[in-house]
Image (cartoon, rainbow, N blue to C red; front, side, top):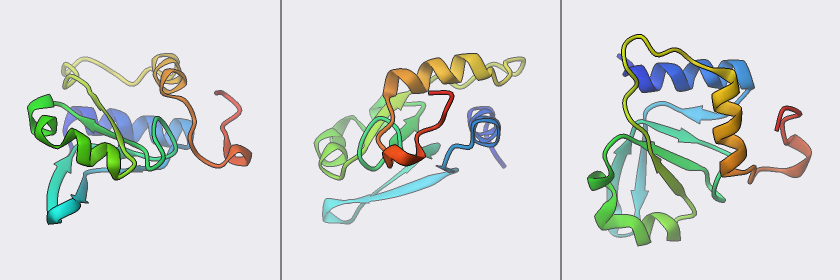
Length: 109
């Protein structure tokens, strides 16, 4: 079952044609496994952005996350009434920047 945050990212992926993995597990150096809510590919860092809700879950591993080519963002779990907003997501994704193939960059970006 998806969390509200994951549902909204799923809606964003469908609406904006994003590549996401929900949920996602990353294996870092030393076989360290971290579970995150969402992996957003092609934005923010070479291997994409890890979307998390609790900074403490990744804080001890920041260097390893960056070395593995990922960025991350800590986002609050949305309220039950909160809905997907195309405008808000485009603004967020524009801030993170496109890191995928230049020929595949979305027109809305």
